[in-house]
Length: 72
Image (cartoon, rainbow, N blue to C red; front, side, top):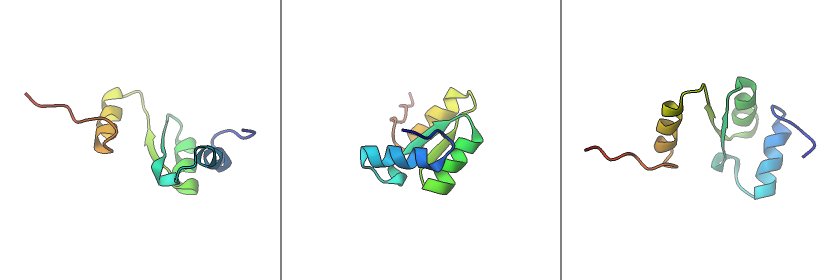
């Protein structure tokens, strides 16, 4: 691609390659500078991963990427 994160051009190149809108992209990363570039500079949805899979699962359920677990 010729550019690397956190350069906003990285995210723009991915968006262009896959022909999607920025708000349709979810960036999951563990570096705040990558999250900031994707969200602030490009307009992507973001999640700062801090080695907490439960928090990630909850966030993905909130975005309706994963189904909510059934309560018994």
